[in-house]
Amino acid sequence: TDPRYVILRDFAKEHLPEDDLFKLANVCYEAIPPVLQATGKVKNPWPNVDALSGTCMQYYGLNQEDYYTVVFAVSRSLGCM
Image (cartoon, rainbow, N blue to C red; front, side, top):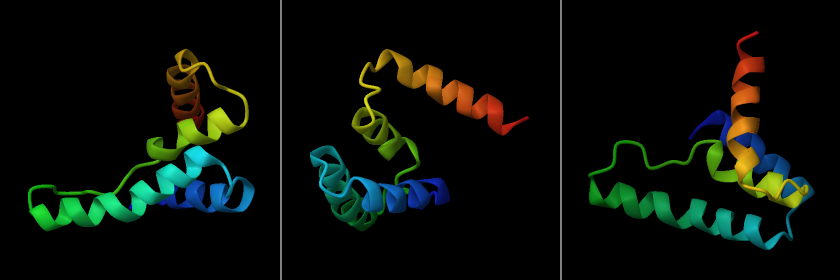
């Protein structure tokens, strides 16, 4: 699993455990990777950080999807500095 996903998932568990979108993402995390592994066709069935970043942004009021790419790009830019 992507370590960034694990960190964001732990954050979400602590700060938005009752959020419906997080609950859905959590169920998907628990159910989908084992099914994909069982097929033997998927090299890495585990989610990356993007699987939860939109959920967290939505929870905190950044609900215009047009901004998701901008936020992603800015975080990547800051990460390389």
